[in-house]
Image 1 (spheres, rainbow, N blue to C red):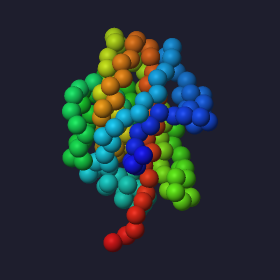
Image 2 (image 1 turned 180 degrees about the vertical axis):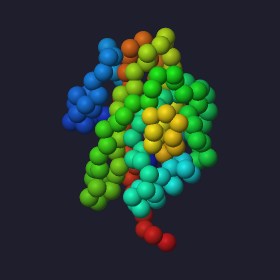
Image 3 (image 1 turned 60 degrees about the horizontal axis):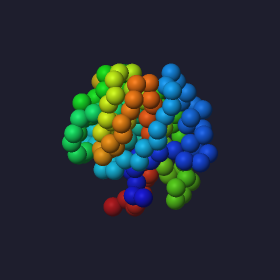
Image 4 (image 1 turned 90 degrees about the vertical axis):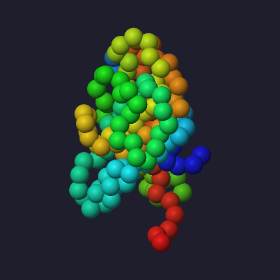
Length: 160
């Protein structure tokens, strides 16, 4: 899998996500999303965090509109009306020690049946800046159903 990516939690991470993200939903669904991008603003968030400036991007939002994720995006496609949820954040090892920034959380559908088409990680519960976005989710959620999402953003390569 090419990183950055959005994947459903599996194995021990899945159990930890379910335990950490218990909420008022009846059940949850994991998702594998395609078309993940780190946005242009997201790159600024990353460099800002290296300088210890700005908030940690750790809020999960979901949208129901059509579209393809692009680096210039600043919002989700038709973001769902319920509040973004704070995510558990950790550093994990993919290739070298602590080279991957992982967020995972569960967003719960509070309204009627919807199809979640895109998800994103923001630096604020409302407004704020979009770090990363994934489209092609295509997950139908019933009322009170949760969607557990994990973003994995891996630092790779060498400096020019």
